[in-house]
Length: 64
Image 1 (cartoon, rainbow, N blue to C red):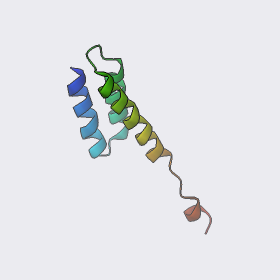
Image 2: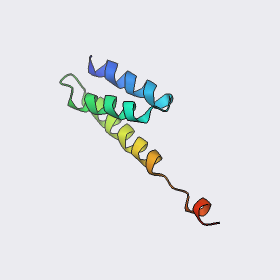
Image 3: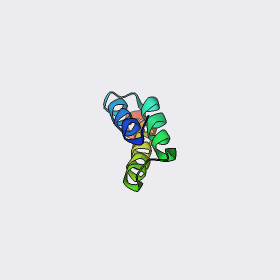
Image 4: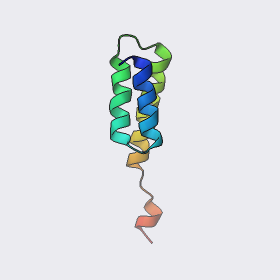
């Protein structure tokens, strides 16, 4: 797959809340030889966002 196809796949997975698959696709973009610097940067930002979403804990709900 091309870097653009992988990036599009990652975005589709993210929209459908398949975060593990999205991370895998975005990481594949980052090592793809045909990825542009912008695609690599956007992929890295997407991975960080997904990890932030998955690690979110609302402490107010944990301590009533």
